[in-house]
Amino acid sequence: MIDTSLKIIKNTNSKLHELDFDNIPFGRAFSDHMYVADYKDGAWGDMRIEPFGNFSVHPANIAWHYGQSIFEGMKATKAIDGTPMLFRPEMHAKRINTSARRMCMPEFPEDAFLEAVYELVKLEQAWIPKKEGSALYLRPYMVAMDEFIGVQVAKTYKFVIFCCPVGPYYSKAVKLKADDKFIRAAEGGTGEAKAAGNYAGSLYPAQIAKQEGYDQIMWLDAVNHKRIQEVGTMNIFFVINDTIVTPPTSGTILKGITRDSALTIFEQKGYNIEVRDLTIDEVMKAGHDGSLKEVFGTGTAAVVANVKEIGYQGDTITLNPESYTVSPFLKDTINGIRSTRIEDVNGWTVKVV
Ligand code: COI
Image (cartoon, rainbow, N blue to C red; front, side, top):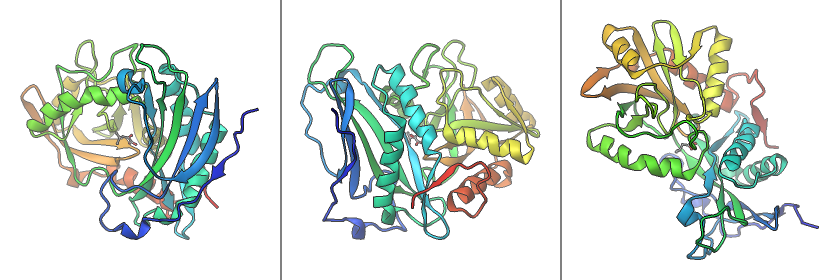
């Protein structure tokens, strides 16, 4: 009989006093505890919350060679009365299992996922920054642990969640390069999974884009290099005249939870929305003829990030984020829901009490 009860081993050496809440670098500060579960003999077990610390890993760890590694990113915030809250945790529980299925990894039970994030956030609530727009970022991930160098589906895995107090991922509007050479994902590939390899493959083209003065790449489709996909750290939205347009998540694009929330918020506000393919040519033309009013990205880490420039094949369009109205409305609404300043009419937040 496998023991799936959650054990909690408390850290007696908190590092909280070392954190400067007014100056938090993204992803470099880690809280005191982490959640760990192990998969062996076909089942998850040994669920525990323990002091944050290093793992000892075999040099032949199979994931380090063949990349069975998937992750999530989610946020905990504080309500105005100080109650910790999670944002749409069940969506993250489901999405990690979509990624797991694509990468031949075992699904992690949704109820265990929800218990894990709930108990971890309860324990780490002092690490949640109070400033609106800041949060405790949770990083659930699953990684293969077999000690073997043959190419095959692993039989052992770790599921881990650690926490980072964070401020905004992007502190200013970004410049995007629409890449006409490299691709992030192709039909039938792993683009919809939140798999480590998708990010590894994006680093080289992103490095080139950075050398050219851009912050990020806006990926185009793998066949014709025309249809806009996503930015890699976020899904992308365009406001053309009075219509909000975003590409459909048709297998090559990550099904963003902030993207989904944004579409609901826009619909409830009565905006015109089109979820449809759009090409880089259409965007560049709209940028030049003045019908492109706003471009912004959405993501858990980024929340809502404005775009101020798009470059494509030597052509550049410049936008004026100062004049944006849709993007600030969305950012304010999401941050407001996460702080209880705005009513959560959709029941997205879960209070950790
Ligand atoms: C997130 O938005 O949570 C992500 O995982 C993007 C990341 C690469 C920072």
